[in-house]
Each structure stands twice: as structure tokens, then as C-alpha cells.
Length: 207
Image (cartoon, rainbow, N blue to C red):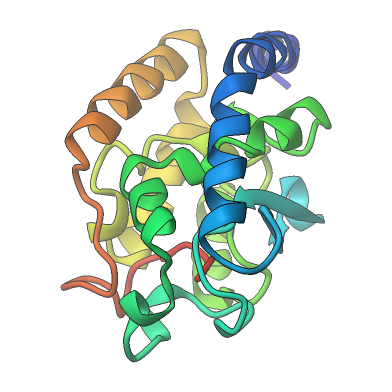
């Protein structure tokens, strides 16, 4: 294992801890908004695959109604907007729904940068990532694929980019992904709910 990978674990923990301390007012505001605008829990957890395809539960702010189907990618829903709450629409567009994954990083289940964790039943994506060794590292809050197409990417393209990150993993690569993500989030670049590439894309959970 490369020396940077060991350093990366420490960097991830320290940055996640700082993030949790700095962003707690944002967490509180979002929690209140979710709780007062729709019925259901504040957080949504879902089974995902981590390093070496080990299972863990990813955390997100709940963005959908409680009667939305479980473990189903957004593109398989006939009308995704029907299930997304008003607050949830804003959270998904700004990616603020992903903030609770700071907890997953503190627990050592995720990294800040890495392939986005696949749903346990996204067999096609998992199989494609196996070809490139992308299932052998910790998944991330954001990654190389996310700044190179995000929801617009077909599964084979996404897996190839995840493999490229795995091969080139390093400090400069992580810095590039981090600042690329900031730009993508601010511009909402590549965000599609059941759009053009949806049938082949690695869509996130319905919540």
C-alpha cells in the first residue's frame, strides 16, 4: 500500500472532525427544516458497499417522503419529483444532503475523496469497478468521476474513471478532486434526476 494511503486516513479524520465542528450550525438548520416540512426522520441511512465490498450504512439528510421505495435508484422511479420534498429538492441540488457522511468518514467507513459508494444491489456498477480495482479502496464523499460528468456518466465510463483514480491516488489527485467538486456543486454541473443518461448512470438513492 502506498504511504499516502496511510496519511490519507489521518487527513480524512482530521478534516472530517474540523468539518463537523465548523458546520454544526448548518446541520442544525437543515435538521429543523426537514423536521418541520415533512413527516419522517431527519437522517436517511442505506446499505452501501465500502472497501473490498464490505457493507456499511451511508448517512444522508432525508430528501424524500417516507413512502418512497427503498433501495431503488432515482432513475427507476416513474416520477422522482413526486417523492422529493421541497427541502429535499434544494438539498439534492446543492449536495447538502451528503453532509452527514462526515460521520461515515469519522467512523473510517469512507474517505473524503474516492469512488462514490455503490448501492448493495448495483451489480452492474460493482462488476465494472472490479475490472479496474475500484472496489479495493474506501469510497468517498466525492471523487474523480463526480467532477468528470457526475450523473451524466454511463456506468462503464464511471467505473473507468473510478479505476483511474485508484491507479493515480495521491495528494495532488485528491486536491484536484476537492476543488473540482467545489466548482461542480456551485454550478450544479452534471446533476440529472432521471435524465438523459439515467438508465446507464450510477444514480444515488431515492432519498
